[in-house]
Image 1: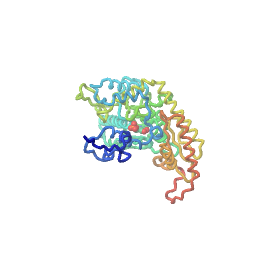
Image 2: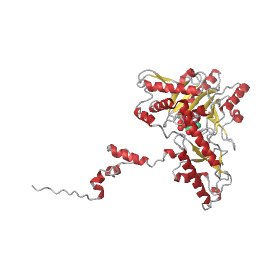
Image 3: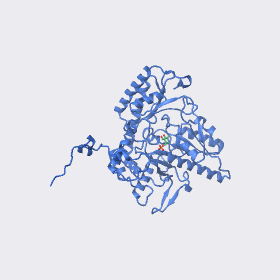
Length: 467
Ligand SMILES: Cc1ncc(COP(=O)(O)O)c(C=O)c1O
């Protein structure tokens, strides 16, 4: 019988057996996956995961991102625990009582860290981040104020919240979403956060609270919480109006306890009703985890807490989201047990030391001058000295991006919009070696920008002399 002839010679290089088994081989299926609509049929999992991974390669390198406060490095053991608990829903407390217990233990640890005089009275919960925590804390302030006004037989219209112009956007969202008038105490040249001196001029009977930030997203500086509380004590003595303080410690509430034990900013101050922190910043957990704690039940009115029983068992819930990943709480619990106070202090010391060293080097590198020096949050802002010709901080940011560093440049809010800065955040994972490489790149980029041919700009595009 004639043996049929089978042509084993490949027609093209792509059809060669070696190429067909190669993991990076491009197949027709890959090309057919639509980018912006749900595909009609299922595809091979390997091909799809390869395609998704390929797309993700175009994202930046998290370790070179000097813009974010959010954790980009965790220990393998913590990553493993997160992977093992990825399916666990924090809302399912009856099913996962251990995760619920871990959340509660983290709240107790934070109550101790934030020096609550009666830790057993503290109420708290995890959230998706500081933004959700801010919504909850703001709502609690609003409800307390409404209850007080009703008890006094007064109207509950027109509540306002007083804060520095340096607050993070989450407070602008809170004011917008929950219909509270935001009252921003403006910055002044050389004073870029909330201070006690002018604050009370913005307060009145309708002020639900004051937000103090530890520390500022814009330059890493701390609002002076104790001075702010003292100014409000004076205001109460003069007017009878008792205004509570919320501390937005998104980053600083997990830095100051370790590095600034002498600083008064927390529940030691009687006027501080509530505090938030991002577990995913200096709590060293991947995004998104936040914490919100209230001094006692009076600070978190009961009517904001819901009891649900439809997942089995009864559980109190006071969060905007119902279902949330339990894995982040597990990771926070791991970090607290793993590092303990001393370990967390060591991580914070490393970050602040690196930030201060970098700031000191940049101070000696013309034409830069420091706005802050990394001695509060491990972050600092710097700008170009007045009169620097021909380039702006935005040019520096752009040039550093070409070398893969993400170093953000932005302008402060009015009336300080002429102040444009670069900001650098130090997180765990930003090693001394990386810091050295960064400085060398910054020096090189600055040298290139200085020697670049002067740009001829139309007059309306000339950078302000202050930038
Ligand atoms: C002071 C401050 N508050 C709130 C937030 C919002 O935090 P999150 O990203 O955890 O929602 C940030 C974020 O950088 C912040 O710096």
